[in-house]
Image (cartoon, rainbow, N blue to C red; front, side, top):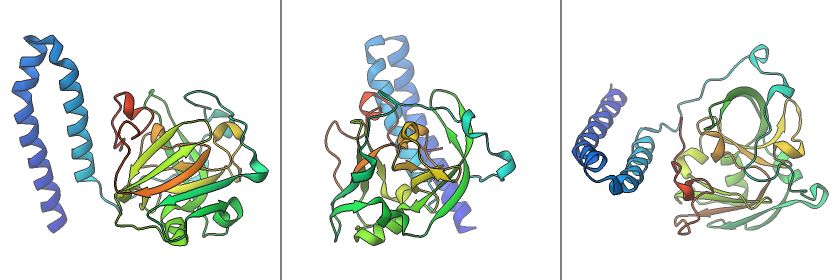
Amino acid sequence: MIEQMKDGELRRRSRRQLLKLAPVAALGVFAFPKASDWLVTEGVRFSDWAAGELFRGQHLAQTFSNAQVAPFEKFPYNGYDVLDPEVDLENWTLTVEGDVQHPGEYKLSQITALPKINQNTRHICVEGWDVIGAFGGTRISDFMTLVGGNESARFIEVECADDYYESIDMASALHPQSLLCYEMYGHPLDRKHGAPLRLQMPTKLGYKQAKYLDTLRVTSVLKPGKTGYWEDQGYSWFGGL
C-alpha cells in the first residue's frame, strides 16, 4: 500500500508538471517557432526527472527462456563509429578512477573471478529494433564492492576504446540486472559486440550500454558537455525503459 501511494504521488506530481508546461508548449509551437529548441530541451529534461523519480531499484526487467532467445546471428551489430576499434585484448585493462578506495588497472581475469550472472533479456535500440539476447557477466554492484566504490556517489562514468562515453545514475548501476558483460551466448564477447567488456542493462535503452570499456569512474559531478555521446546531442540522459 505504501509503495502504491508513492507511485500515485509521483504520477500526480508528473501530471502537475506537465500541466504547467502545456500552455508554454502550445504558445511556443504556434506563436514562437524559435522556442521549439527550448521546449524540446525542457521536455527531455522533464522526462529524465520523471523517469528517475519513478525508477525502482529492485524492479526486474523481464527475462526469457532459452527457447525465446534470438539466434546469435540475428543479434545486430551496431556502433556509432566503427565496429572494431582493434582493442589489444591480451593486454587490456579497465582503468578505475574517482571516488573509489582501490583505483588502478583491473584485468579481465579479476572481473570474471567475481560471481557470474547469466540472463536472457531484451535489448531495445532507440532506432526502433529490439532483440532478445543471452548475456553473461558480473553485476556492476559486485565490481563496486571489489574496487571500494562509494555507492553514495551519484554517477558512474565510462569511457571507451572507440572514444564513445556514457554516464549512468548510481541507482541504475546498482540494479541487480546491470552487468559488466563479457559474454554473449555462452562465449566471450566478439570484437563487434564490444569485446572485451561492455555495459548490459535491460532497464536502459541501447545507447546507454557502452561497448569496448576502457575507463570506469565513480563521481558525483559530471563533466559539462560530457554526459554521454548521444545525450550531448539531445538524447534523453536517463534512457530508461
